[in-house]
Image 1 (cartoon, rainbow, N blue to C red):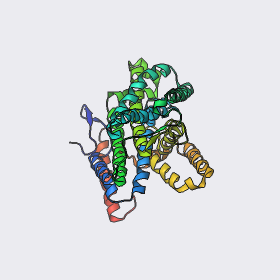
Image 2 (image 1 turned 120 degrees about the horizontal axis):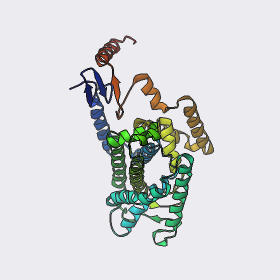
Image 3 (image 1 turned 135 degrees about the vertical axis):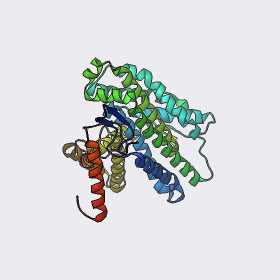
Image 4 (image 1 turned 180 degrees about the vertical axis):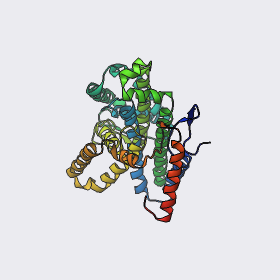
Length: 365
């Protein structure tokens, strides 16, 4: 088995194509350890810390879905809050009929995906700025439609039933675990999707849509599938948000249909790096640190966020993760391919081992 990649294709014994330049088995083990550590945090830290991390899980899930749309399918959406809100309401409705909100989470996610199919038909022929504005209009239309139903709170919203737990610490931990599970599933789904044939089609579309069509790629179907998957992920995040807030409110600064959510997911992706799975993770960390540090400064908080986004856009077009990738050639989630010239893989292994030996000896490279 090759020590430099998890997938290898040989051609004539000379040219090699790999997913990564390094062995990614350790990355998988490290990811599993990180998940276990995060799962144990409610037993270690205070509820306030898990609440902040719960919010981070929501932002990371949304950012991963927005990155899948914009970074791989070329669909810059400004209306993903529509599916966030639908997911929250599709959790509220079963909860009003006696089902646990936690059990209703899958229902909310699936129903958001089902609604995405006819909505995609309305915007499927649009591109660039036209698509972005159309999704924003659709999100507003969905919100206005939902607000007409007084049975689910109308324009003022409604408390989420089924969460009157006597043990508030247990409720906080359960909400945290639900957010963690949704985030892990979302990132895992994106990773599996991009390593499939659909991932190759999306890469071709991102590079040159016309060339992809001329090569026989089913561009429309691929984009529809991505749109639906992103809706499912945003719907699941909306369900977690409803449980976290203990209510579903449609149109406020923190409401489930607020465009602020799309701004946050886009900010995290731009800061971290568009078109990479690692980018939204880095961007979410930066966003949460800035939010917790600067939110007491009121308007200055938003100004600083905007300045950071502008600076990253101007001086690091590929985001913070792009800078790391260019310098160290790191792939925590390898979904692309490397083409090795004859003998290059062996030289890379020798050079990596030499660099590792110098690092252990305290010698600079």
